[in-house]
Image (tube, rainbow over all chains, first blue to last red; front, side):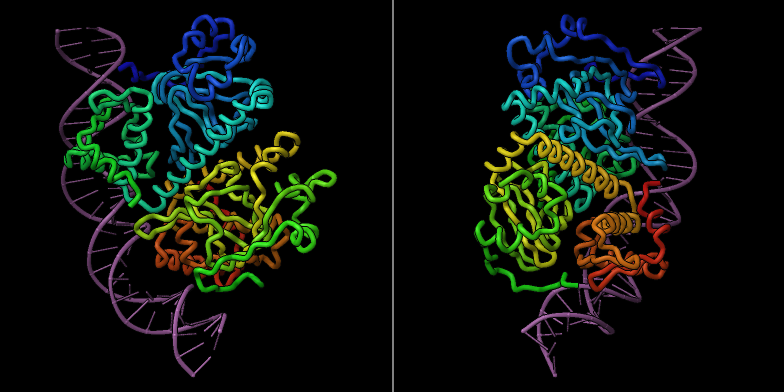
Length: 252
Length: 252
DNA sequence: CGGTACATTGAGAAATTTCAAAGTTGGTGG
DNA sequence: CCACCAACTTTGAAATTTCTCAATGTACCG
């Protein structure tokens, strides 16, 4: 599981140019045929003409800081990232989880600045596609426009469910809902083996997502483990009772 | 204040056709020049060719029920509506507030069904614009496309702040943030007089928005009143200490 | 003038947070 | 290979916030 990695803070992530990217990354990317990325690069020669920058961000470092000028759509190629808002008092709320192939906040794709930050959970390889190219292609390509609208709507649905979770549901259900949503996403990617899947979030990050304190998140995770629902830790989740996990995660 | 009104549940809202609408409503609408509505109807003759249905929904009735087939973008012309998700256990989470001129969930504009419901808080006049016309105009009119992208991004920002509120902030701050956001929206509309503005939500609805119980929402509102911050009730909010309200509502 | 929905209050229970300390783990350098 | 360090996890106990239940008060509509 090459998902972990700790880095000293403050280092500047490396940036490669489009030329080296083509040879080294996008050309062999497994994700090319799915998601926004695939739709964007679809069509003859498109890959060569889309301007993009790829960079590597070590785990725990920021991919983007709230308020910075942003000049393109941000796509996660490898690793996990979280989109979050940092409060002056030090608390953070994680707004969404980005996995390989995910676009960071489809709805915000053409914004010049974001109110949120993006942090690498594991080592992350990300890719930035210039506004010019995104707009050009969205305008030209009805299928891409369609894909983007669907992604935006899906993002809204996801946010709505998260609001329901935070507003109406207890700690256990919220954590179960998080685990279950990742289970489904990993299953879709074929990354589920023996009811086990990669889950590199720390308890601190689970807490930041679910609006709990790390201590309480720990207790909830312990309860799920003792209840024989699933084991969470060491970068993975092992589902022991999927039926119960689904029951907890479901609205009821 | 023509904001209140109780209706027996179950009645079927009335529907008028486009012809009568033009004469009776849209032609004289104050909102025509702002927001999505204005952009949509912009251009010669557009008003006459956009297919739309206007209807009146009494207070407390649903404008839309989760899961129903939806055939057009929903616009609020008059009154207040809430977008919410109903849980099987009877609880509800209000996801957003729609005021005159607001599009219901810009991000979901082309979805055939919604997971959320929409309920009239006051008597509501709403307008539905067929997918065909929305798409046609968005494709044809770059300014409208732009407006729509901006609305979608704003909706996402709003959802993000709501997630922060529900996940990280206490009851008082959440209620203050709600009141403050409505204060700003009313101010923008020029509906603020003597630091007082229309606010037709019941405490039950404040609770559903902020993820509190009605009883606790009542206590918070009482605390704000006793603290000399603002008086909430009888369909209005009177701001007594705007500085303090802004301090409570701000992230800190 | 009722009636119904809405608002308020009190008291006790439950969920969650806070604070503090001790255990674990994984990576690093000797 | 081992020892150590830093970050992460676990546990306990007490404080705080929020909820629940139940009763009473209030405003508005017909």
